[in-house]
Amino acid sequence: MLDRFYPIVDKTDWLTDLLPSGYRFVQLRIKNQPEDYVRPEIGRAVSFCAAHGITLVVNDYWRLAIDFRSPWVHLGQEDLVEADLPALCRAGIKIGISTHSEEELETALAAQPDYVALGPIYPTKLKQMPWAPQGIGRIAAWKRRIGALPLVAIGGMTLERAEAAYAAGADAVAVVSDVLQAPNPEERARDWVRATR
Ligand SMILES: Cc1ncc(COP(=O)(O)OP(=O)(O)O)c(N)n1
Ligand SMILES: Cc1nc(C(=O)O)sc1CCOP(=O)(O)O
Ligand SMILES: [Mg+2]
Image (cartoon, rainbow, N blue to C red; front, side):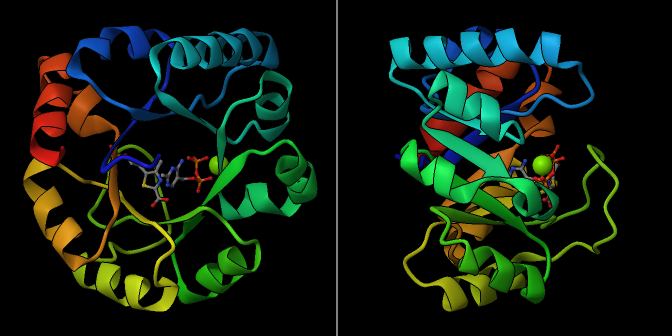
């Protein structure tokens, strides 16, 4: 179900805008919005993705993911502290977990996730983070540690940088700015789909 191209969007409307590109796996990552805004966005995203055969990952909002039956959630290390993993498991929801250090990787693996994300591979302008860029070499080290568990590379990724990430062992490349900030986001997403499928 995890696709090699893993776009991340900040509004449900992007799901429609990018649809002609043929993307198959997507994360809805809404930050700094009241629950009154987030709840209907997640509801619409779940319905839209189900209707179009797209696999949705809901970032952070694991309770809403359960309420709306999203197939996946993505949790950071802070999210993991308060998330009810048994409840997510009972709901049949798959889990992706962020990692930025070996210690975080061990914490993530203890939670038995369905993928592990490593970042930031390159500098990113999207959010401030205390970690230096990991570099492509770290992808290979993570893959050696996690084996068959899918690995997602994130942070400053572009289509031009993706090939090296896959070659180093990434199963998927997650991307925000390279698609959403492109002059034509749908065309850029289509380029990713063509290059990765
Ligand atoms: C695929 C993927 N990898 C990492 C993240 C970051 O999650 P987190 O550390 O919880 O930070 P926020 O995205 O919540 O700001 C992600 N969302 N997706
Ligand atoms: C949301 C996020 N998490 C990261 C991590 O390293 O955990 S990097 C990142 C930002 C990804 O955006 P862009 O593709 O624009 O760099
Ligand atoms: Mg989070």
